[in-house]
Length: 231
Image 1: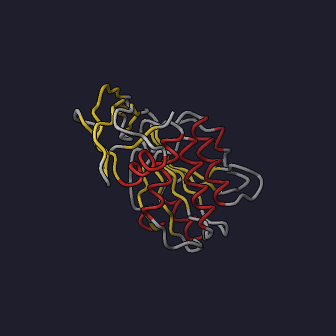
Image 2: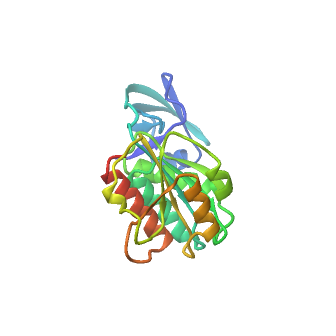
Image 3: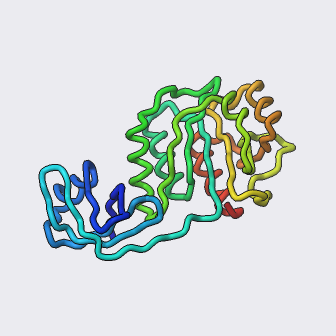
């Protein structure tokens, strides 16, 4: 089953534009009269009929719609992007497939990648969400520094992926709030000052492996574990 993204499914008609138009019309060769499946990435899924195709967009008549309520638990991953673009994109794709709800790039003293192609990031996350048939598409929130992050407050369970002998294992914890925030640092780890700032802000240090993991491996590990314990 192939889903196509349409920004607005509130009315009786919808448009396919840009990449979705190219995929549907130019690659898959759909024609007027064909029935296709649509999603708006905000809980609504629809079935519609292609009724008009021009050089830049395709018009669909909506035949039926269903709406899914949002999940009760949410996971917000803050992660220092790897230097290698391919590894960053793999991290995005797999985290979305596993169930992350929000991703924010974390700027730390040792972050190896300071600039992110936001448009490509959004597209990769949307594609992964549609591939895994997620009714709600995850969001990318841009970049943030440790200093700005720890100054924020919210009703969330806040975790810091950092190995220490006295830290609990993430899989041994239970949710207290509906949302979890977890920080994954660069491969050079957080600086001592950053670790102290996070500790002072109430982040709970957790162990996710006895081995040293690459950033992208740590990211998908924490998302997996958080889903398993109930977020």
